[in-house]
Length: 367
Image 1 (cartoon, rainbow, N blue to C red):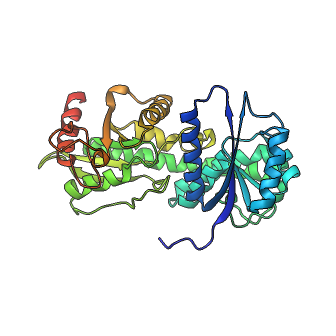
Image 2 (image 1 turned 90 degrees about the horizontal axis):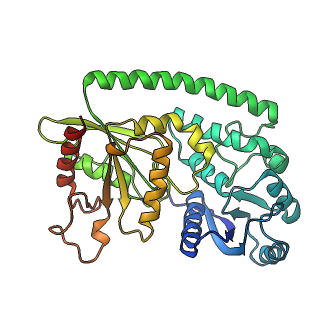
């Protein structure tokens, strides 16, 4: 991938409510900065406020709003990024008051998905989620919709450069759903063919940036016929969007299909969960789910809870979930001899052979 030549300057804005722990809030802000970078923004300042709850009309209070105006004059950013999903009223009032492009957490994630989608189904799913998000906000972002151009918050909406009014959006949503129904029937046919072939199916799931794609590549390097990595893997949030499936051997006779899937995140937009539900449900319907955890992340326990919550919402069976603790090479004081069987390093290959054995044992136990 070529290096980015232009970045949009952005200010991050967030409210810490009374029920939010400081560590949780700091983690959310770090994640927001990572999402902003993944979308193509350079964070030039951050403004936060402690309140019992966000202001109903403007998200932040009057005093903080004035402070933000001064910050805009000083930093001259191209956009503001809010760490919550703004209501249509909040979005409209903030745009009227500040006269700058405003992107909330949901639209930011939708934008990243709009950049990363490659398959026809992935593109349709992102477009559906984006349009359903935009529909109730036409009064707030009508100006942007009438001239959808470049920049964060304007991708993934499909029919760019067109005036997308409510009727156009509703018609497009219905058309997308019809196309997705056809694709879903095709996927069901492929699923039945795999079942007839008798291959067990394994899905990699986990928090975004836990190393799922790296682990997928490490398993393929050891157990795939090519002996080569199969997907692009780096530290960008939501690097993997479209699913990838490969056949690997757990031993000389035992073949399985393994699938790399999209990562989860706290406050994953419900528009995306709804749009990607069929794909996600297929992933969690696998014979075995490898829940990949970044053991070197100080907040890994909280992120485990986020993933478990999404899996539970999607109907995953707990007995089919197997945790795999990745990035053990980044931990001090753990040698390969001391590491438990499900502790691995996708980067160094530590524990991969043992993991293949663990997967085989677990599949045999639940079959």
